[in-house]
Each structure stands twice: as structure tokens, then as C-alpha cells.
Image 1 (cartoon, helix red, strand yellow):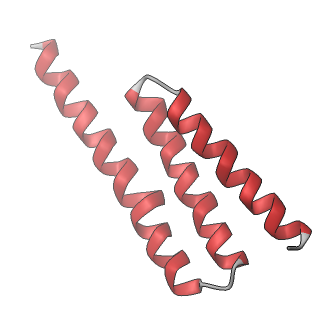
Image 2 (tube, one colour; image 1 turned 90 degrees about the vertical axis):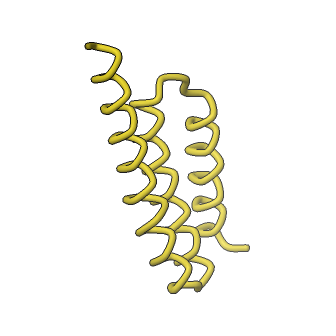
Length: 80
């Protein structure tokens, strides 16, 4: 395993730990988006570009966006 793979694995591990360690949903969704981005980078390094593109769309864009919209909607309901 080369140094690029090691760095990619460490980025994924660190960002995964950050997602778990964050308790507030708003920053957690942003960190989850970064986690999806690091997974995409890892998949690219491991020569799986199709999986990297799928992960980028779902893990770095769609999932954090849905969480942010859900948090905004539930907070607006509780504000009423």
C-alpha cells in the first residue's frame, strides 16, 4: 500500500470519527458531507471511479442536503 492510500484511509477514518463525535445535527450533516467527499477520494485512489461518482452524489451532496432540510423543517415547526 502506497502513501496516497494511507493518507486517504486516514482522512476517511478521521472524518468518520468526527461524524460520530459531533452531536448537533447541523454541523454533523456538514461533516457527513465531508466524510462522503473523503470516501469519494478513497474510491478514486483505489481505482473505482464509478463508485466514487456515486458516493460523491449520494454521500457528499444528497444525504447532507436532506438532513439539512429536515433539521430546518423540524426547527421551524418547534419555533411556532
